[in-house]
Image 1 (spheres, rainbow, N blue to C red):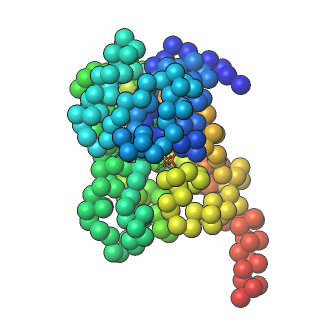
Image 2 (image 1 turned 135 degrees about the vertical axis):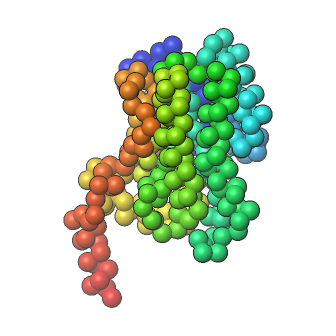
Image 3 (image 1 turned 120 degrees about the vertical axis):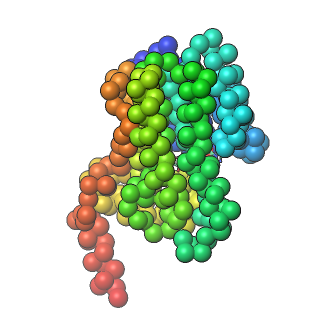
Length: 275
Ligand SMILES: NC(=O)c1ccc[n+]([C@@H]2O[C@H](COP(=O)([O-])OP(=O)(O)OC[C@H]3O[C@@H](n4cnc5c(N)ncnc54)[C@H](O)[C@@H]3O)[C@@H](O)[C@H]2O)c1
C-alpha cells in the first residue's frame, strides 16, 4: 500500500547491489511512495550486480562511485542536483564491507590494511558523504540522511569482528554531524540498527543462519525483514519524522531490549539435554 509519503521528494540511494539488498527494497518503496532518486554503487558492483534492472524499474539514473573517494562523491551529488534541477531531500547510506570478515581473520589477528578499509568503506564514507553534501549545499532544509547500523556497535556479538568498530563509528558520526547539520540547515541524521538479514553483506558473516535463528527466537516481534527496514527508512525520509535526529533507532523486533526469552531458553535447554 502506498501513502505518497515521499511525493515530490528527491534522493540518492547508495548501496543497492541485488534484489536482496536493503537499499534495493528502499528504492522500490521510495519509488512507490512518489520519490525520484539516483542510485549509486561502485563500478565493480555495477558490473556484477543487477542495478540496471532496478534503475529501469524506478526510472533512476545510476551514478558510479566508490564511497571512499571524495571527488567521486562530489560528482554523485553534483550530477543528482543537476538531474533534479534542485536540492536533495534524502540520502541513504547502505554500505558495508570487511575484508577481515571475508577472509575469516579473527578480531585478535586482524590485518591492519583490511581494518583501515573496513573503517573507510563502512564508516568514514558516511562522514565523507555528509561533508561533501554540506560543502556543496546540496541538501534541502529539513532533509534527512540515514545509514544502516547493527547492534554489534554497542554489544559484542561473536564473529561481527572489525565491523563492530565501524558501526560504532558510524553511529557516532550520525550524532556529531547531526548536531552541526541540524543547527545550521535543519538537516537530520540518523542510523537504523537492523536485525540480521540474509543479504550479500549479511551472508559474509560466518554463522549468520544460527544468528538469525537466535535473534528471531529472542525478539518478541521476530526479526525485522529487509522490506520492513525499507518501510522504516521511508518514515525517516518523510516529513512525519522532522524532529528525529542524532538517533540510533533499533529496528529489530525488540531484540535489543531482551536478555532471555522463552523460545531461546527452550532451545538452549534442548541442547543441554543432548550433551
Ligand atoms: N544484512 C544484515 O544482516 C545487516 C544488518 C544490519 C545492518 N546492515 C547494514 O546494511 C547495509 C547494507 O547491507 P546489505 O545487508 O543490504 O548488503 P549488500 O551486500 O546488499 O549491500 C552492501 C553494499 O555496500 C556496497 N559497497 C561496498 N563497498 C563500497 C564502496 N567502497 N563504495 C560504495 N559502495 C560500496 C556494495 O556494493 C553493496 O551494494 C550495510 O551497511 C550493512 O552493514 C546489514
